Image (cartoon, rainbow, N blue to C red; front, side, top):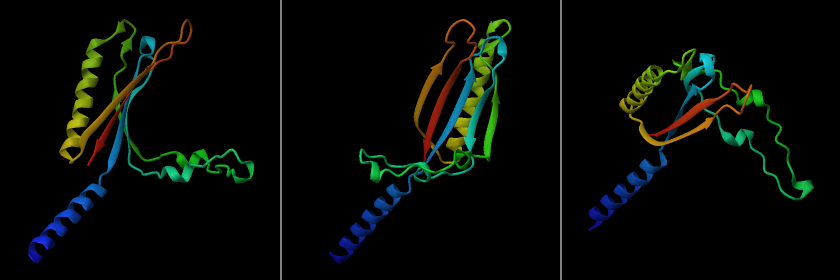
Length: 149
């Protein structure tokens, strides 16, 4: 009976320990939707860690308790990151489906590489900021791939 309880306790602690070691990594693809192929498109992946608490302050409605966030934006910047070139969605002739297919191939390669390194694709979220009218000429299609291990 003691052996069974000991085995059960070890199994429980192993499960708890495995849960505590979950790590997440975000990979971002930014694809330009600027007309005439003038934008830049990339996959970006950081090589550095940041602790959000270093850049967070807590605000209250009581003025005396307010503590301003004195962190500098430059401290947030990441200098070491991986940048993979992608093709723009547009060129002088308009939308290029060939470029989209090429980007899909490169993004798929990145995802497969991450999976081979032991990461699991957990979530994908995307957004578009498209041209805001005459003369704007700006727009991106951004996708965040969130991996866990």
